[in-house]
Image (cartoon, rainbow, N blue to C red; front, side, top):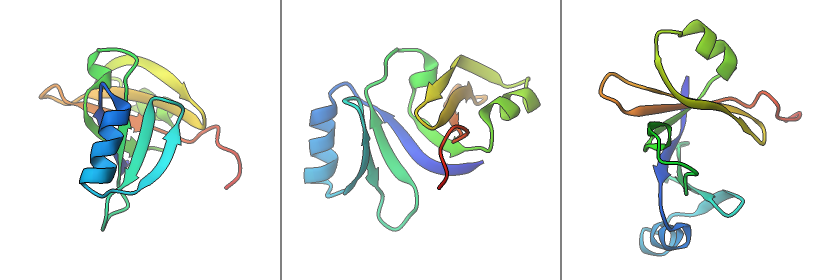
Length: 117
């Protein structure tokens, strides 16, 4: 597992983008549709990902986003974790979430369907 982003759910993407860009001075690194924008966090390889979540379940709570080789393999190897929500298909892979003992979501993703780099 490698921390890649901090997931921050928001209700108003435009307002949140303006805050992080114009007030805090962060630089946008990528955008996915009309619901997700990521920003570079200076001095680190970790990004801040703002997202208007499509639901209100615990799988959409704020937390770290960790890259794994395979979401499916990680789930199979860790059946005792408290998995929440469904495994999601992403443009370049899959995503899933589980809760830590305090109820905080941990987001996993892979790039299993990404083309050659």
